[in-house]
Picture (cartoon, rainbow, N blue to C red):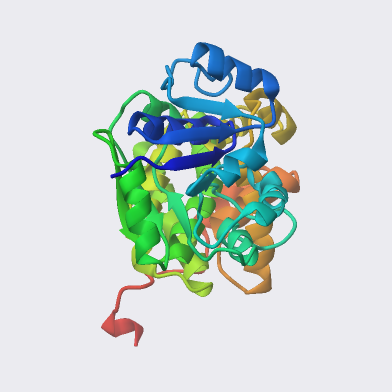
Length: 341
């Protein structure tokens, strides 16, 4: 692939890991962030000590605070901004876009101001329709360490998918394609809720049977919610669904898992988030999903139980009761059973 000019918006762990892959692939990569000290550190030392302290970054990766220049010079733009700031940054770059530029969201969450995915925000800018979403079991520290990793690029546009695959493919990072942008993005956002549940369960030293049950029922809730909003249920059997769920629900590297573990250890939500020092998207996602589930009468006992625990001060046994005494009796909802007819 010919050398391209790429911009990654955001100075966090995943944005840095992606920028480093593309810089190592020989592309001209700029990484925009607001923090001038962080920019100076990356350019002088080759390290992003706050988010990826052990990862030596490519000498070809240039950090910058000049958003306008970074956008103007880039063919492809990866938006790796936390959900709370995503809309603001997209509004800022919209006047700088042209129809030939490609926009890829890597943020797993919802707009905190309304029920809206990151791709919805990107499509609203209406300058370019070359839009996609990157999601999967992608723990940034493992990517930066060269661990074998798979991800999914989702877009209705064939050219966007193939372009993203070429930019990111490496000996340790493999990108698969999916046209179901809604399903892939909802999978990435929703699993953060259940990572909190699993972290909480692990702190309580539950057995492997329990963990398997929680993860499997989590997948059922995720797909039930997503299919209602137009997703393909089969998407949840892939890397963006089951793959991401397993990685996030079983790894202490997951921010949402860490929040859940802290809750299970007796700490408040405020204490858990303060100790983490980074954004845990699952907390905002939980608020948004519960509102939509109630509005659309969607059965989500695990998410509801966690919501009562986190926001309403209910006891932990509320979460257990909602799972063990729920109404639903079918294991796999989207399979075809003669007895269900």
